[in-house]
Length: 261
Image 1 (cartoon, helix red, strand yellow):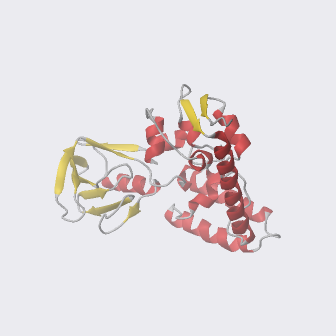
Image 2: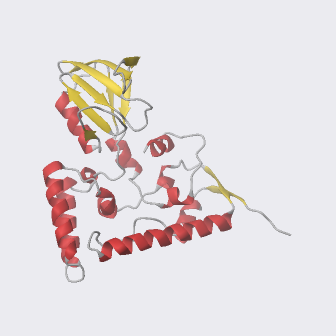
Image 3: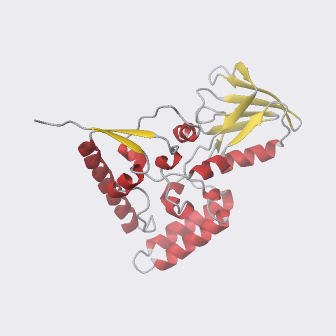
């Protein structure tokens, strides 16, 4: 998430594997819509902030210990955004944010103060961002279940369980398996690159083989999940090599290949 956010803001240099740029992720606009900022002297009810954090994939706990968690004690909100090296403590005065500062997980001592903190989402697949929200996603899941009922009867039980959890909590730990239903546009990290990006490819033949190997492993995993009735059939989890090459051609590309005698 942090890498995608940096790409969207124009990171000067980024290195990545073929798998990282092939697998589906949240569209850039979805990430932009899911990000929110908290600043000192800002007025915002604590209940609204906690609801936004839960919708962005944060887990509520008694004490923050790692990225993606938040806790509330009275008028104090602790958050650990995924792009930060340390958690952040926000102290409220009523509905007003009084102070924002880093703090140490072990000692709980406050560190440097901040004027603001950016809260990135903690999951690439956010059910609430589906078209029509949670209700829209549930309707898609019911339709997917009906279309495959005869071939995969166990799919009924899995989807009904997930629908119940979605309607109760608005979240789902295993939401990645429904990524094509939540983000039908099939975005990848390549969609975050500016149009004037220069792409350097190190050894095209190896990249091609790595892409094919990744696609085969992904297809095998998906087939196994579909056969067990844990996943509706879909092939939109990753780009194959021809699709990846087509998207790369939209940019200026330099191929660093070895020419053998």
